[in-house]
Amino acid sequence: MADNGAPSREEVNAKLEAAATRTESRFENVSVSLELRFLSIDGKLDKLAESVSALTASLTEVKAENRATRWLVISVVGAAFIAITAVIVAGMAVLWATQGTATSASESVLRVQDIRRASAPPYRVSLPNARR
Image (tube, rainbow, N blue to C red):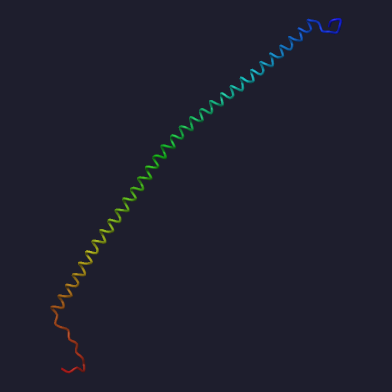
């Protein structure tokens, strides 16, 4: 210290040097901290990009599966419609054939009855008290 109580030039310079060193040290610490943060964020962004890529691939697979499922449903519904139509047509054919056979059978029965009536002697009822 100088005689008048003021610090000497060397002391002031030493204090300024110490303050400058502390400031540079703090600046380097902040710089390293920011660099670590950016590296951390960069790593997280890389992971996020990988996740988005995986989700995109998964979504593409799901869309393909949905397309296949949609065509399967359309095919099954179409096949069911064709099968139901075939059953209805077959039922109508059986009904038509059966009705034709039933009509033929009833006509045959009527013919047989007509033939029996024509060939049989007339039926006479004899009453016990009837006079002849």
